[in-house]
Structure formats: structure tokens, C-alpha cells
Length: 197
Image 1 (cartoon, rainbow, N blue to C red):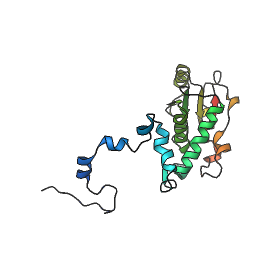
Image 2: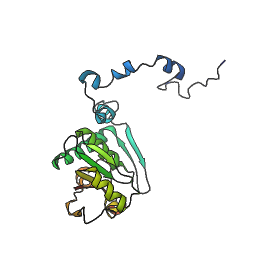
Image 3: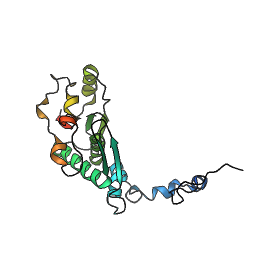
Image 4: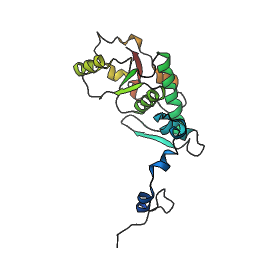
């Protein structure tokens, strides 16, 4: 006889793991996604927007962030709004489907907002490891052919200045998310900005 523990919460989503595995069908799961009807898939819609459209899920936590400078919780509705604003900012910079956008940020909520915003317009998101220093960063930036770099004032100090002038920076988050619960870190040094390359 198997040693099976009952679920701690009898109303849990998965009451019997073994039965869930035996009865699982990818064909049934596919029907829950918009791509099943349309033939097209936008991962940002599937991951965020469809939940934000659902009155039951819209105010549920989508991202719970705990960092050195701040702890915040972002709902599906807030994440949809923020990622839409970011996508629209990219459009204003003439970023189109297939263009590359590099993200050079520490792990912060804005990192995920930027990734989702890229996905919404079909831009190719290129995350850059936050520990990269100038020489390696320069190689990545030049080799990528990126149209836009998303970074913060703290990370900007590592950019190779002769190649990437800082004068084109526009702080999308400070301008775009008042009332959504995302405040900048200490002194605003972690608030991302965009640099058009």
C-alpha cells in the first residue's frame, strides 16, 4: 500500500496528484489558451492579460517582489497596465516586431514589466546579466544589433560611454506608473530608463 498524505487543504486545486497525472491531457489544456481558437499565441496575453480580464483573477497577485530596497506585490491588472505602457513606449521609439531590446537591470519588478512589454509587441527581449562589466557589455551591445537598451541610473555607469551616449534617456517608469504601486528604490537609482541605440 502506498504512503499517501491527504492534502493539507481539502479544497486545493489538486486534491489527488496521482489521479491528476493519470487524467492529464495536453489536448484539454490547449483549449484553455487563445491560440487554440486563433492559431496565434502571445505569451504575455496568456500569462497576464487573460487573467487581468477575468474579474476573479484580476486583483490576485501576479508578482510578489522582495528586494533590498522594497517589497511590493503587483496584481494581474497592474501588470497588464504597466506592460502595456512599456510596450507603447517601445512603439513610440519605433520598435517593431523582430527588433531587439536589451534589458540590463538587476532583478526588480520593472525587469519583468519590460520583458512582458517586449513580448506584447513581438520584440526580441535580450536579458543581460547584471554583473557584466564594460568590456563584455560592449561586446553584447554591439553584437546584438539592439534598437533599445533598458537600464537604470546605477547600471548605466557600466555602459561604454563613447558608444552609447546617455543624453537620450527617458524614464518611462517614473512618468508612466503613478498609482500602480511601483516606487523607485533608494534615490531613484533603480528606476529604469530607455536608451535608444
